[in-house]
Length: 137
Image (cartoon, rainbow, N blue to C red; front, side, top):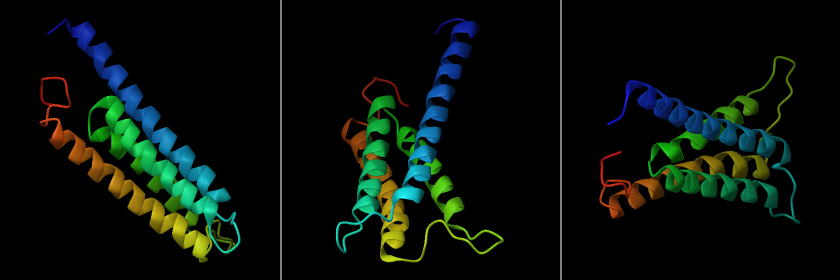
């Protein structure tokens, strides 16, 4: 199993990876919150791209760490950043407006995080619930 020092390093590395995934999701949410309104004609292209990016991030993070928690961490960071930035400030200004692009960004991104986590569960179940390592996650 290893020494206590080795296990401590393993826990530290695991925490650092999960922390980095939360920060990655938050950065994606921060960038998306300011860039979602770019359109291609009537299509909110930037919002849709931001939604796809967080979906891919959740699935890739889950695959990389071989755990559903890998998908939950960027999803948590994205939701935290995006919804905090969607709240009105005391002076009445709003970063994410109640427009079609704003709705596509917030609702589509939230749905993308849910789908990313669900796909992670499906992938874990397909691998037999072991995360491909031979031991339960």
